[in-house]
Length: 165
Image (tube, rainbow, N blue to C red; front, side, top):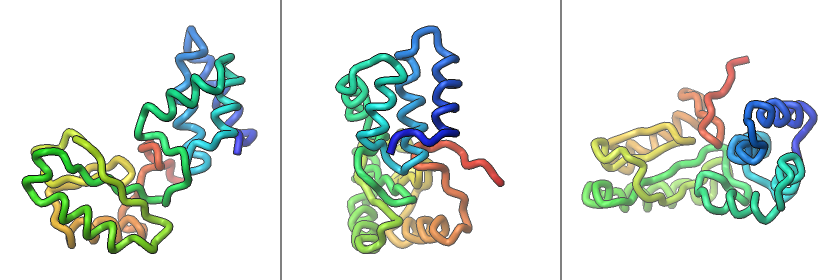
């Protein structure tokens, strides 16, 4: 889906902040992802039009950054670090446990990621870009379950702090 009316206005406000329209591509990709939970092809085309860029350039930018999702994912994005510090501290066990536990839960997407710069808390995970660690398999699942029950407030899928209404 392209931007809805309120987000189209937000997009114009974002573009106005920059001396060069092209500089707004990352914030607009975040806006699109927060609106739909992922960056749709239609959103990439609209961003390209708003910024006078080719859709290929917007797609290339979107596909370069792993934080932008080009297919639907759950409301909770659980990123398990499997870089060196986390691997030696049993991150593969955490990843395996979370993948099995949430395999049939469309609200939770579990992904393996490279270094999340939390080596001092290895093994570490992020839930919608909020850091947690060190965790063991059961502790990681408890954290995810607390987000799922609303006991913890998850950021948006792009990591923005949710507004309290």
